[in-house]
View 1 (cartoon, rainbow, N blue to C red):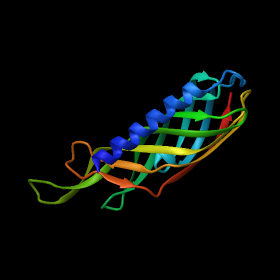
View 2 (tube, rainbow, N blue to C red; view 1 turned 90 degrees about the horizontal axis):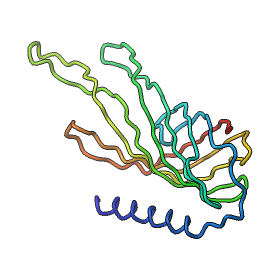
View 3 (cartoon, rainbow, N blue to C red; view 1 turned 60 degrees about the horizontal axis):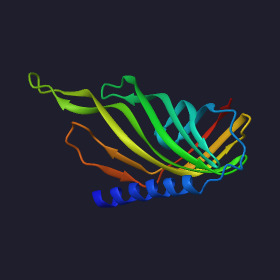
View 4 (cartoon, one colour; view 1 turned 90 degrees about the vertical axis):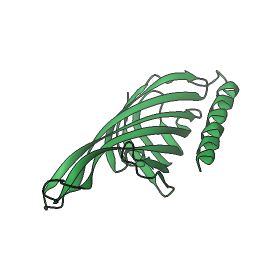
Amino acid sequence: MYLQYKSSFFFLLVLAIAISFGATAQTETFIARNAVYLEVGGSSGRYAANYSKIFHQKGKLKLNASAGFSMWRNEKLDSRTSWLPAIPLEVTAFYGKSNHHLEMGFGFTSFLGTSLAIDSETYETIDKVVFSAAIPLRIGYRYQKPEGGFFFRVGYTPIIDFPPRTGGNWSFNPYWAGVSFGKSF
């Protein structure tokens, strides 16, 4: 399974490089390089408020980095509710002219979650806060005007979930998508 992930990543990297060499300088330059938006699903996992910036553009190819913040609700065993933070980070390449683009990329979403633990002195079950992370992949459609304004994107975002330092198993969730609305400026 590791070889499959490695070959998929290699394919996306080669595709992005090939697109960048084939891009022509005949298209318009994006003046609006920043965007703020709300994403539901997608790389955030549930929802997130995000900021993104186009950090490179050459012809029809634009490279974008984004960071977000979210609070996830967590029901505990003793019926209390806690809110735990999640931080989605993403790098995408979008290709197209004018307002319509094909978008591809990947990210890293870190979040706090809970797991059950047993107190060694009292032998009671307790909720333990643990660090978790996921790697979302993205392929989708992006609507963004070069001069700014309304911003929209929708994408297929399968997620690779891995539990760092907890000894759990990696998992792959192929059934995930996301939609984003916001403003570019």
